[in-house]
Structure formats: C-alpha cells, structure tokens
Length: 217
Image 1 (tube, helix red, strand yellow):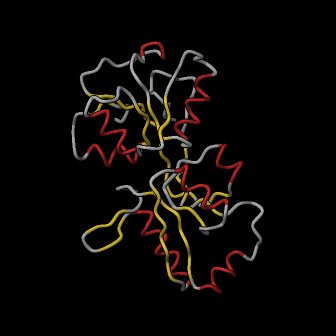
Image 2: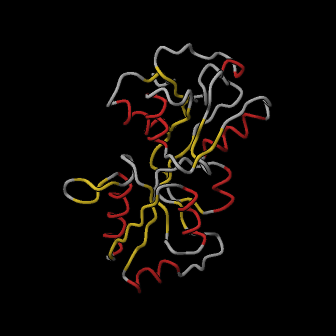
C-alpha cells in the first residue's frame, strides 16, 4: 500500500478506488434507470481535464467520456455530457438530479460513500504529494515549509483533514478557482510549493515535463 506522502506520513496509508461513476443518491427511486430509458437520454456530469473529458480535434474525448459513451450505447440511449470546472459545481447537479450520474475518475473515500452510491471500480490510484524538482524532500510534516493548496471538496482535502489529527500544525488552502492540473502547473511554475494529486493524473502530466518530484517510482 502506498502512503499519502510515501516515507513521510506513514501513519496515513491511503489507496483509493477510482469509480466508473458516482451513482444516484440513496433516496432516488429504483426506477431511475427506467426513467433514463423512457427519456432516451443519459445525462452524465463530469469535469474538464485530460483524464476525464475535453474537446479534441474530432470532438469530445477523454477516458470518462469513453466510459459514459459506452454505457449509453449499451442502454441504447443518447449521451448528454455536462462538464463543469470544479466539484463544488458538480455535486449539486447530482443532488438536484440534474444529472443521472457522475463520471470524473474520482478517488472514493468515506465522505463520498456517505453522500452517494458508488459504481463499479475500474482502477486503484494513490494520492501523491507533489513539489518542484530540486526542492529538498520533506521527511516530516514540519518540513512542509511552503504553501499547500488542493482542490476544494476533493478527496485530497478530506485526506489532509484526517492527517491534521496527527499533525495539528498542518495548514493548507482549498480552491475552486483551479483544478488538479492547474495546481500541478502552478507547482511547476514555482507559484505554489506543494499540492496533492492522484497518481493517474500526475502520470499524464509528467509526460509533458521531467521537472516534477513526487513519490511516483
């Protein structure tokens, strides 16, 4: 099992499961699928990003888009993708039933299990502390000597709250103005000291540069 900060914060070893979708709320009636079939449209909420959904030269692309399109095709209905920039906008769409499900490659934690039903898992990912190459590797939480920023309402923020129980001095900020990829770019540009990213997102971003330091092997 891979720890959140690998070799730094061994007390909080975390492996999360990427879910295909976040399914409807527990109180939604069991005929929700029948309603989708009757309407002939599957409405899927997602986030913009290279690992989720984006507009390519030939139209919509992204792994989550491909999964959603395959599911809609299996049901024999039209797919309507509704992309958002942050989770704070996305979750209310599911709460209000404006979308039938969410497909964003989210890591699943206890908070999500309490709010929603979770679909089948397709991958296991770990959370990584990321900082610019050349910076000294922190060995204790006290050595995190710069700003830590993560996406608001994310599993990364939830993990930091758990971690704070063991390290009360740990501080960070949460943002709705930047997504995971933008925070990684801010680290690369030295506008930010630390962020936390999922291993699959970090792997995609690392293809563009070799200037990251992270616990990836």
